[in-house]
Image (tube, rainbow, N blue to C red; front, side, top):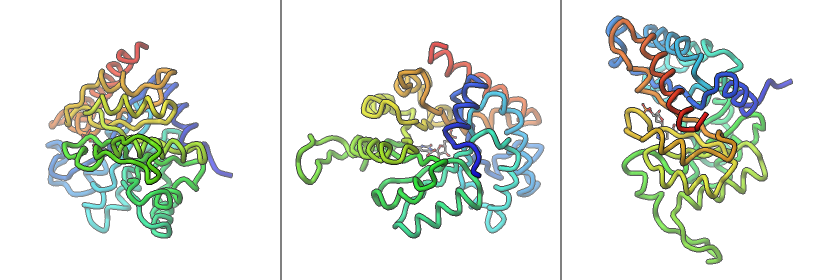
Length: 282
Ligand SMILES: O=C(O)c1cc(=O)[nH]c(=O)n1[C@@H]1O[C@H](COP(=O)(O)O)[C@@H](O)[C@H]1O
């Protein structure tokens, strides 16, 4: 029998901790705090585990970005597993992997992330269309966050291009809104979709929320990327004052570069949760 779904874990963790904060785990060897620097990959695992312990009271989810573990070489995957083992099973984990490929390759990616790593959700890109995402959605208890309007400076290069459906029925709209509309249709069929929308673009985030009133939104870009927290929260909330995860990595991980790093990370997470809740009006 399978355990609780991503949605069940997220709702439980979010309401228990009164939190929409998702802590991003993006560790880099040369950014480790002074007491751990130069002590090898095991120090990186220790760092992540201490960050998890310190932020746990304030987090509704964790989001390790696989790139930072893959960058460690052949050991990366097992180091990631050691980090994941420190996250209590009732707290959901989103593998930030930004996968997407032709169907049978996407199936292999989904197996790796959901069955081998045991993560509860994943980030995917929609460029290949439905059959590139469907293998992830086939895991009913998991969730796929589809990139919609990303947080980076080049986000608009493609995502803002105006597109029209081949039949010409719908009005031309930016590609990111066409993605949002399509993912809303996938959601009706599968029930386990979400969207990624950057906090750095609150206007676009609001347009996505308007078209997708009930889809879970994963919202990175607050902190190191300069996204304005209050504007993002207001733009992304659903009608129940939730429905989003504000994902923050560096502003928590590197809140202090000295020996107080874990304490400082916990304090940064506590403040972020409070600021998010203030913007929610709760
Ligand atoms: O999918 C993501 O999480 C993501 C999408 C996006 O549009 N922008 C974005 O920054 N991210 C990820 O979110 C994290 C942001 O990290 P910080 O800027 O340090 O909080 C990184 O792991 C990014 O890869």
